[in-house]
Image (cartoon, rainbow, N blue to C red; front, side, top):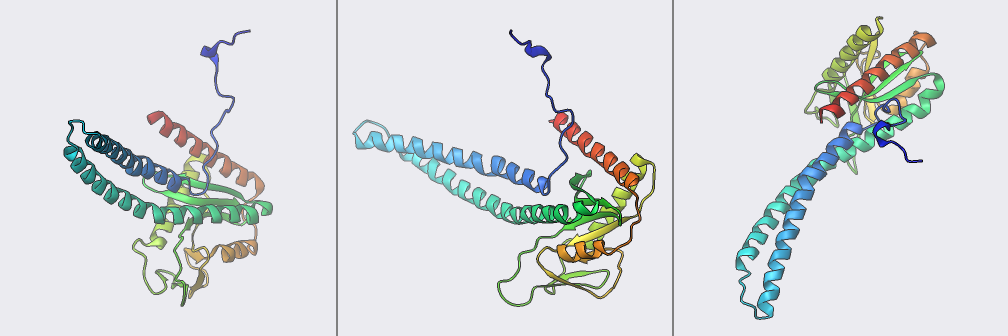
Length: 266
């Protein structure tokens, strides 16, 4: 029997929620597609054209390769510059993507068995939240900062409750302010969608780094991923299972609806 294709539709009712590091992965894919491949393709085409003219010269056919050769050389120079700049931009994105994926998997492995729901890469208008945890001890927004470490010497992140220093240097963007903004945004989103108010704890994680804090319970937690999991495991329960599922449900609805809207706008 011939199927009527007009009435076919996908069997998947809802889009999946986002993966760890998905924003960075999408940015890298864009840079590769828009920043690398066009210039590689153009340069190869010009080289092929120039080669054809040189072959014609070799076989004594009346053609001049110089124009295409000059164009090919110029395009190759431009392409090398463009490709170098794109690779330079991709490198820290790759590091950040790897960090978010590793932290995301670690949080799921350690905290899901303890009753936590873990969501990743929740998009807002001008930023994203790398990870959101909803569980018995509370709700947490997690900003992952994957900084490369020196091969030798100290590898320490210090935190005085307001400012972060990575091996003595302050980051260009203030992670503490960034984490506070993310937690405030998520608080408003949960209140508007679920109709309840829940405290949201902002967290900044430096995976693989040794982190010291001079304040015991600051507004924004700054830790490495293992210290964070160990700290959360020791806290008392504050949210019951019904509210955990309620909050998770509304956040997933938000993520799916936003992704659908983004796909429809393309």
